[in-house]
Image 1 (cartoon, rainbow, N blue to C red):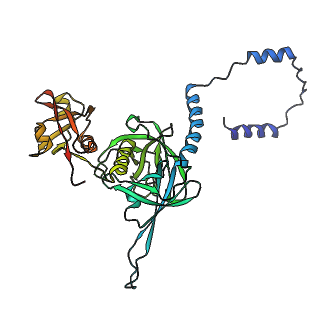
Image 2: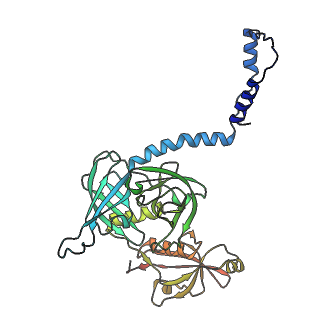
Image 3: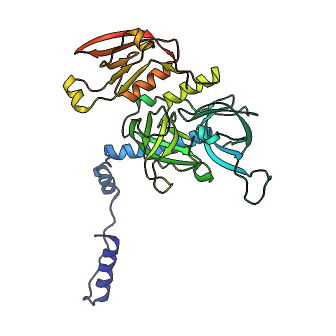
Amino acid sequence: MDRFTLLGVVALVGCGQPPPVTIEAAPEPTIEAAVAQEREAPPARVLPQDAALIGLAEVLPEVSEAVVRSVVSVSTLRAGIGRRGWPGSPPPLQQGVGSGVIVGSDGIVVTNNHVVAGAERVVVALPDGRQTHAEVVGTDPKTDLAVLRLVDAPPDLIPLSFGDSDGLRLGEVVLAVGNPFGIGQTVTMGIVSAKGRADVGIVDYEDFIQTDAAINPGNSGGALVDLEGELVGINTAIFSRSGGSQGIGFAIPASMVSAVVDAILEDGEVERGFLGVQIADLSPDQRSELGIEGGAWIAEVQRGTPAARAGLLPGDVVLDFQGEGIPDAARFRNRVAAQGADVPFAATVLRQGERTVVRGVLGELLLR
C-alpha cells in the first residue's frame, strides 16, 4: 500500500463517528526490558548487492574528483570560408571545441586529431580555469590521435596513468570525462558494451571500446577511465541520428593511444610495420570446420614482400602473431602495423590442417 493510499484510509476513519473509547497509557518500559529488547533486536543485514552499491557510491565521487584534474578543454581557431559579397576580405575564423587528457607532467596532452586538424591556434583550458597556448607535436590521422605540448606548462599538472585497456571486461563500469558542447567539465557513467570494434568506418586502424556512457560533441579527446582512475581510452565518436548521445560511443583503447603517443614524442610520427598480404575474416562455418575460434585468412601474398620472404602462403590462417592470439583480420592488421619496421616477427599459421610457425622481418609501411 503506497503513501497516498494510507492517507486516504486515515481520512475515511476520521470522518466517521465511532463510539467513545477509553485510552489507557502504556506502562513505561523498565530499563531491564529496554536492554533486553535492544539485545534481542536482530542485526541489520547488508545484502551482497547492497554492499556492492554502497561501495560503488563511495568510489565514483573519489574517482571523478581525481580524474577531472587531468582532463582539459581544447579550443581551436581555424580559417573558415569567406563571406559572400565581400571579395578580397579575409575568411572568418571558425572556433572549435574539444577535450584532452594530460598524460605528462611536462605538459603533454593527448586528444583527437579531428579536434586540432587545420587549427591556426590551440588554447587549452585547465580544470581550474587557467588557460595556455599549446603547440601540436604531431598527429596520426589513421588513428585520429594528436599530441599537444603546453607552451607554458604550470608545474602542478597531474597526468593520468595509462590503464590496462586489453584487460577490460564487458559490463565493467567506466566514466567518460570531457567538455560536451563546450559547457564545461562533465562526468558521465556507463559500462563497457563491446571491445574490438573494427568495422565502424571512422579511421584506418580501429580497435574501439564501445560504451554507453553519455558522449556528446565536445567530448572528443576526453578520457574514458576505469574505477581505478586510470585512462583506458580516448573518447572519439558516437553513433547518433540526432547529433547527441544515444548510448553508443567509441573510445580508442589506451594500448593504442600509448603506442602512438610514444612514437610521436620520439620520432614526430608513427612508423608502421608492413607485411604484404591481403587478409579476410573466416565465416563461422569455416572456423567450425577448421576447429578454430578466430584467425585471419591470407587471401594473397604480394611478391617481394616480407610475407613472401618469410614463406607465408595464400590459404594460411594466422592464429597467433608475436605470441598473441589473432581473433580476426582487423586485429591482425593493427598488430602488424603497431610493431613498426625492421622488427623480427613470429606467426603461428594453420596450413592444410597443421600448425606451423613462420618467422621473418617486417618492412615499413610507406603510405602511413
